Length: 271
Image (cartoon, rainbow, N blue to C red; front, side):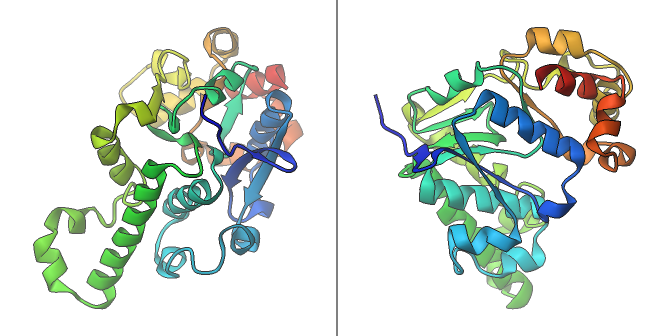
């Protein structure tokens, strides 16, 4: 079986990013508490701008990344660089672990493991060729963006019109690159855990309308489906923090857990 660089001297290494740490919503902290419960052997590394250089160095990316790109796009680039350098596990901060079954996913013998190609969960070897290629393409995309925006490089626009049109897209440094790569890479190097099979996005099984944001908010914040979620979810739930209503983002832990809705009751149950 392949040996992965999942462990540090302090234990299992798990990375996430939130900028700034001090403004992390209380419910996100509750999500992260589930990691300590079901992965107690882990060393959770929470990064923000204050410790990013300590882990990645000063020149890992051009400063244009932090100057011009949104935090979600920065997070895509940061997770790639961390996994390239250290290997291990990346979880988005708005991820809930619901049972020890999540450990089974970490034992999968593959260079790269994801949940249906969601970047919220990535387990990777630190010498992963896929991650290295992703990192190199991020560097290329950043240079392309800089050339087009600041050097007014019309040649780039002409030679790469499709890439130019995607510069402003949310997935420019993440899914846009990685999804294309995974279609061409040796499938033995990549393992995709079916998100529907493990019920990682339970709201998709209870659609009330075709508006994804409204359906998400209805499922997690306006109703209580927590018993079904706990029963049918196999170890992990992937949330969408950007879809969380503002009032819930502002609640402290006690207030959040006092609510009688799906998300509050899931967290109360698993913790």
